[in-house]
Length: 110
Length: 114
Image 1 (tube, each protein chain N blue to C red):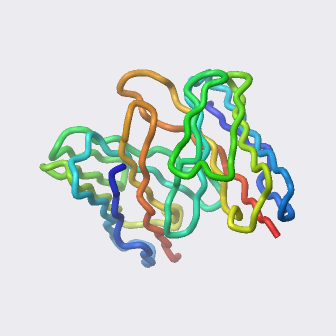
Image 2: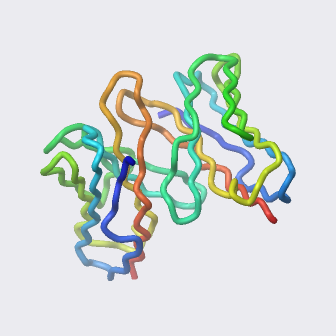
């Protein structure tokens, strides 16, 4: 099972600031997913990236997949309190299963 | 709207009790999963099922069993609960289609074993 490392573990910022969280592996990702888990809820898929160098945007969220497909980042512009949550990256380990990183807990203060 | 429901949001059980956690999905998904989530450890797969009556062990199956008698329902069983099984338990489901890996999660059951 591939080990996914996420950093930082915790991030607390003021509303309106920008933030970036990272997901890294020593091995090549086949594809990578980002999920957000709000307090008291299960994770919800934000995006899937497949191609090295790929950039996807979802409103104020920008997802990048490294050229070598060993790393990915999630950048949030002008963060809002509604962005508060646990951000998880996940990689397909076989046809059925996903392997998850430990996550980054993001707190956006009003 | 797709939906995965779990029978309880919060559960408190005593050491040695048999515990059943139920999960139901209404999306006709073939695959269903049980994870536990602990701070700093992320989601760890306990068991998954790719069809009715089929099951496979995940990364941490010890102390757990599962049952899938109907396609929409997947149950996690703690035969004799122990304090180290205090955790958040998440159920998920997904389609079994090539290239489709999105998993849909329930809201979780926070289990405390005293």
